[in-house]
Length: 273
Image (cartoon, rainbow, N blue to C red; front, side):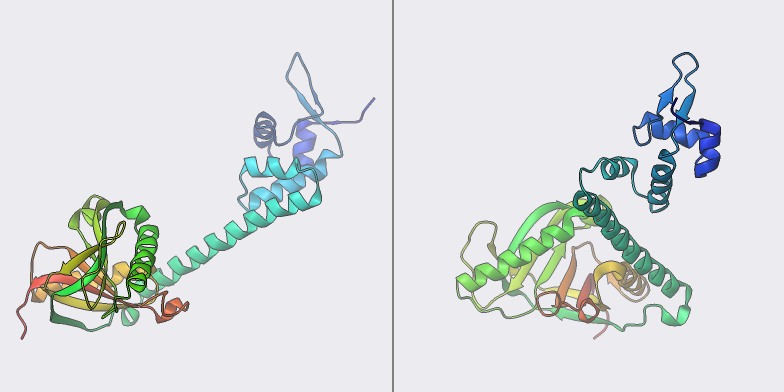
């Protein structure tokens, strides 16, 4: 007769609660060697203790039960290692996001470290540009931006039209209010570009802006937006017009995100000469 442990003893041996063991059975992660047909009482083999310990450690690393089931069912060590490595990479990515959020929060809690960049008012002259305009969801805005900016520079290079300034973006209020709205990415150039696919010629209109420079990646760009909004409320007359951004230094210039510089422009009726 095969030796087995009742669910209570198995719970004590593995530090997994009876409720958890029942759930693992129901989801197919850890199936008992025997289940009484009359009472439903579960029994486990001694060799399942090691498996339960592995599961417990995977769960401590927040591995989903579906992934744990896949790891335990892997046919060879290589396949198992690939599944575990993929989860560890996800954990590392989540840790990086958490560390970034913690650093941002610490900055908010330290008044001396809060937004200190200077804010200016200036007039931006009209300029010819190659552009792409589309209705986008804000959650997709970054990927859309990356594709659009690459397409613009490629089109200008193909048509041999010189670039004359930093790329920029014009973002409708709906994009911020409703998380979906019109966005335009443009690259100033020396002549009107010929229409090609999504790329269209555009004369970017003149505008008066209150501006602030955000340093680094866009993780904390909301802090710059907040500082700029406070300034406009106190010192300037805001107008109902799209937000501007100019990408002074970005991924095209350097892979070091700490060196990136984005100028944010809030449309105003200028009051400072």
